Length: 213
Image (cartoon, helix red, strand yellow):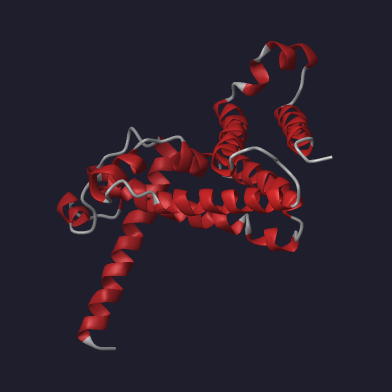
C-alpha cells in the first residue's frame, strides 16, 4: 500500500470513529446535549481534529442521516418480490412502519430532526438527494398502480405526498408516545401495535377503494 492510499485509509478510519462515537453519544444523551467537544473527548482527540473532517455538528448529524437512509433501504430490499404494484405499495407502507418502530431514533433523525435539512440548505444547494430518491420510488409505484386502474383522476405526486405524510403521521405519533394516550385508545386499553395495525388497515382499505370498477 502506497503513502497516498494509506493516508486515505487512515482518513476514512478516523471519520468512521468520529461518526461511531457521535452516534453512540446521541443515542445515550440526545442530539441537543452533545457538542463537538463531547465527541472529541470520546475519541480522545481535540475538537480541532473533528473540524478537519466535519464543518460543524450539523454535518455530523447529516452524515448519520445518510447512514440512516442506507439502513432504511435494507428494509425495502424485499419489495421486488411483489410484482403487482398495489401489493408492493401496501408492503412498502408496512416496511416503512417496521423501520420506524424498530429504529425510532434513526427514524426521528431522518424525518423529524431539523439539523440534517439545515445542513442541506446551507451546504448542498437545498438538494435532499436521499429524500428525493425515496419519494421518487413511492411516486413511481403509485404511477404503476394507476396503470392497473387505481387512483383515477388523482395526481401521482400529490397522492404520493398524501400517502407519505399519512404513514409518517402514524409513525410520528407512535414514536412520540401520543398515539395510545388519545381517549379511544385509553378507553379500550389498546396497545400501540393494535392502534397502528387498525389505522394502517383502514388506510389501505381507503386506497384499495380508489380503483376503477
